[in-house]
Length: 505
Image (tube, rainbow, N blue to C red; front, top):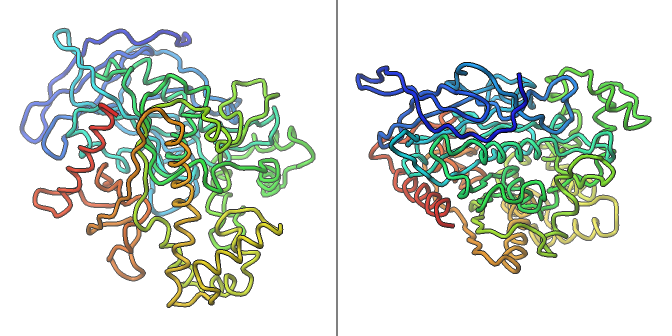
């Protein structure tokens, strides 16, 4: 096979007839720069035909010698490849929320459009590329998590994608052996794929919005900062995440790499020994070993994260300096930005603490050790002890955590994990960005939520992720909305809001 270097130029769409629900539909074939793809047909909430292309490779499989390396360029193929079902998820910590097949061969994306080019028509619709949530540890761009049925009632093209997770996406020794940020370079490859190919799906490569949630929101702002992503997108949506939060980057990647290696009895004498040993570990064992890195309960919530790459790596660097420093200096790609958070965010984590007697006793009796772990700030310094004492005074009035004070604990979680960083980031960017910055707070509470009160099906509040319920059809967790449902008005408002920004900024 020959290495792909060309840009997609063929716009003609071949179709074959089939039936769906007793009516005529088409199975589309498009020609990309690498070869032809056969898609399938879905239906939007309002009955529009959606042309769906799922499980589309955007890079070579990151296996064998390509593990812990930047994504390798895609190679071309002969014939027509089926793009009618999702590709594998990337290896991740086992859980019950998203029980989907996974493999180290996971660099796939999905494309959804309601209008394809023909010899008579050349649509040129604005595009949104969505990077998923998951703390850089879990989830994917799978159609059952980010289904297009709501958003594609608007005239946009949607791309969702996978990227490598956990150690496979971020392991770094802080030097040229393991420089890190492989997941973010996967995302760059997605954005480049869009530039090369999206016209074949009716999309406009000069009108691309990068969007993301939580870890995906961090990713979007990092792309604004990265020299690797310049010119690849033109607007940004950053939901419930920021690069100015305490956990936005991993500041001591070598220590984390040594801890990871020790879980498999690898030598930690030098970077090369860590690399050589972890190259031999089964990818699923590597992904599911993450629990061995936890220090208290389920915390820290995030450990594997982006790093500032060493100049000596010999590779193109995704992140060259601390994100906050770059924002303060105005060193980022200026563009319209739409960002915000939900009303209650991570405050629900306080209910987990109260449900475990040993956990809240730890928080009450060993707070100088536990708080920096749970809320992810520096440890064992005079400054960290000052922060801990100020948090207890401001949020808890220096009282022990009990049922009557758990709201204060919830506010610490919400502010520490999302709200403080998002607010700081919005102010930094709006002070130097020549383009508009829109800042929202999502407060609508419907019948469904990512978090329910213990023992009930009553939503805890408006939790982290809940605003996505009204943008995407998250069929793996929630029923699809039907005519007359109380949530429909919010779906219409959110998808129209997104479309307006995607199209005009």
